[in-house]
Amino acid sequence: MPRVEVVPALPVLGPDDVLAVPVGARGSLPDWLTAAAQPPVDPEFLAAALADTGNGGKPGGITNVPLQSRHPRSVLAVGVGDATLPHLRSYVAVAVRRAQTLAESGARRLVLPLDTGVAPAGADEVRTAVETALLAGYRFRDTSTPHPPRLAEVLVVAAGADDPAVAAGELAGRVAAESVVWARDLVNTPSSTKDPAWLADQALGRLGAVDGVTVTVLGPDELRAGGFGGVLAVGGGSASPPRVVIATYRPHGAGPAHPVLVGKGITFDTGGISIKKNAGMREMKTDMAGAAAVLAAVDAAARLQLPGAVTAVVALCENAVSGTAYRPADVVRHVGGRTTEVRNTDAEGRLVLADVLAHARLALGATVLVDVATLTGAMRTALGARTAGLYATADGLADALLTAGGHAGEAFWRMPLSEEHVGHLRAQLDSPVADANNAPGDPGSTTAALFLQPFAGGLPWAHLDIAGPARAGRDEAEVVKGGSGFAVRTLLRWLEAGAPADLPEPVVRD
Image (cartoon, rainbow, N blue to C red; front, side, top):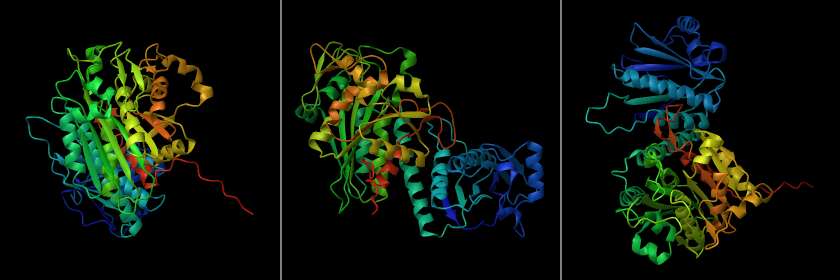
């Protein structure tokens, strides 16, 4: 990733620089360019170039103008629309990606002004820009040839850069992006490297070095002693034994609230005895994206030194095929004693989540639970590749997470979980030999949520099914092809807001 710095004014531009110019609606140019005594590029010349290329400021539109003076070497006029935060993400991402291409020909720095003809940039805009600049430039490569040259620096220019609130936004954006990058690296690492022990070591190495964080890794003996029947069953077919990682951030003076984030961490999913077809396995190195997201959210919360406690609990397993693999018709006993009849070994994510949800409630003192998982193909079918499903037992929790997702630029859609909507589906979970079965049928995402709900007990609980947006098929805004790190920024925003789980009390006026 390039180094990102926020400054209050344009620097002296040289031949290694690329200058981005935000183009507003109807091709409007910002005042810092049109009113400057010595602008870095002639506004009339740039306006003519915009007209010739049909660039009317629509988000994503770009006009690349090389300059004869080479001070800067090139101008990128990029549409910023109405300068909303989504439009700003597009502006920054398009500029960063084009500048990365120009870096292969000698560019070294992108100068990225944020102040537009709509308004000067504030803390939210700077945070968004820093996040996007770091994330849009992300690449994961493991090749025998040298990587192409990359940008060394992105200089974000905002007139209010010296405002303490803007500086706080810069820090939050930087930390959030670095944690998302860690999550992306974990998701993108091939399963030939990424077994449960490796992933547990990564969590221990990174989080264990952060002030206020304690990390515990449970191996097979501790899992047997703790009754983690789902984790042991799913991981039993692999030569790489399962792990459960518990990472707690508790700063001095933290109150009694204890949100616990639970993540599905299947390091590779063959489907087990109910084996997937080859096409269904190709992306299964990413089936631990939920675990990566919750670990990264705790990482960011601790690095920002948020005042509240938070814990991540992740179940790490490889769902493999062997003589020791669990089978259809097996009965699994979970933490807390609830039992499940296995009807499909490819519905493994809910079995491991059941254990860690129950453990969080019974042993860790959770006051609110949020689980994150690439759980069902049905959710991707329902909502597509860019939107995650959100189920919640508390309206306040659902509203707070949806608000956090809106600020983070991550899309969620609340799915029904009320009795009048789903009560008739509960019978599909019935089993003649256990408390429930793990493959109750359609609608697949909703019946999966219903399977998990008892393990949360009466606590406020939200289930985020990120099967669609956890992996991206192409670059778009700050998201790049591959593991996306989806949900990290939403969880962080929610934690920054105090992890609310209840609707605010109505204001009573005399």
